[in-house]
Length: 590
Image (tube, rainbow, N blue to C red; front, side, top):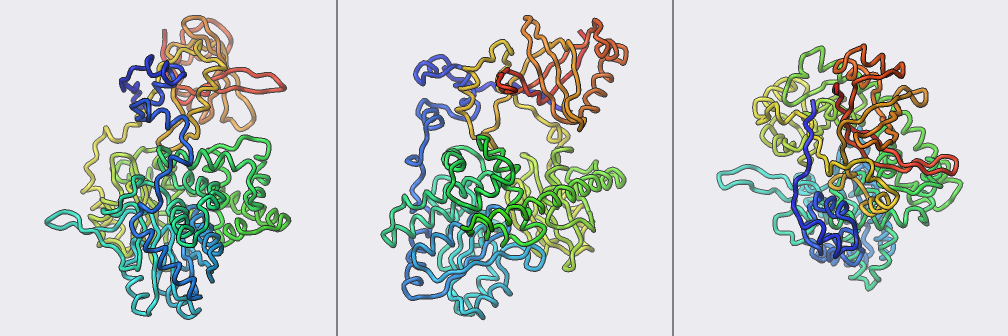
């Protein structure tokens, strides 16, 4: 079930359009993305690196830089320990290259997803001590490692934490009490007393900002850190950060550099994915390049991905990129099977009716639990946890909806977990198997969710007749990129299309081409990607088999379609044609 809403944010659209020299349509789209003033819209359209926030505003950034500078000057061994996803690999890369530039004796460690689990743990600290490491820098983890860092402190080691995850807390009579690790420096914009304006940056951006402050300490120009922009952009998109304000600028600038990147490893990934001739977008980062890097951490070791980024030999880069591509293909098939098993589990057990969905897939590879949780969340529009059996008990990942703060809800039942952490929209956990049903019961009892929360809400930017679509409008829409979380592609809508015909494209059964005519007589092709059989079944259920048969036979019929869409330019054999990509549909009889 869906509810369609048209955005109703107000502004002087015509006045702002004149001042900004753009169309009222573009102004309205920017207003729908919470840009209110002329200045905010100017920054949205023209924001550059000069508009990024001062790195030294990050609490403990200067302190951490001075500590690391002293360690480098003393010749102490430093080890970087990161997470194993794209953000972890990216932040490790940035810190490693940045510390090398400063003359550090530095190495890196990426935990094994299965053997080590998420983040820093005591045996990784013990191993570092045995290796003669004096100082550990965490990236994309560490904020929840109070016990582990306390253990390292007892061994006489020094810790600098760079992270972006939510700070752990306990509820008390006076509200939340935050639990920070006792590291020499803790750099995380989500700390209560951190003055950094952008709170929702990824781990790689925190690492990048820290390297800028470190370069200041060594008298190295910050301009040199611009070589990390592609990697910071990649991590920002793949960690699903909100693409507004600083994040939007970082991704925009990173994408500009991506097509002419000097990184052989990144070039190889682009080449292997056949993106050399394409304008690389945030979509390509999030759904093509990023998953190849993630696949190494899921099915092998994330060290492969980091070594690819660090490699400077073209032939070797090509080989490693090919390996990651194969791993990603394997991951895709495993995910498809796991997704089918998840739906089967929920329907057979009746748990599909729960407010919070717990899916137990004992034989699922733990590395793909989060992907499956995301797919199931999209299907049911409910918060979802997918758990699998490991040698150390159950491990799982969660994906949430806007009205359910997943991390806060997990804090309420924290005694169920042996380990957990995350964000409002995503989380990871470990627990004993015998507490699974207790967890299911308590999460659902606590959930303040209603049936309204489970209805998918479709937010329409503008009801725009297709006759308004032009090459000029398409050029303006390009200025809104990069698209992603918090800066979604504009969604337009039009009612009462007459379907003059349709045909299936390709052989996958997932692409349908409609020939459409609007009430004013304007004609436009519409492309639908998705479950075509389900769409045609919906048409028949609403309009009847007789009407559907008349349409298929080319006879007069009474079927009409409302749809939401995004316009695109279709280029084929040197010809450019405007068409719409249909996102949502509703059938009715005239």
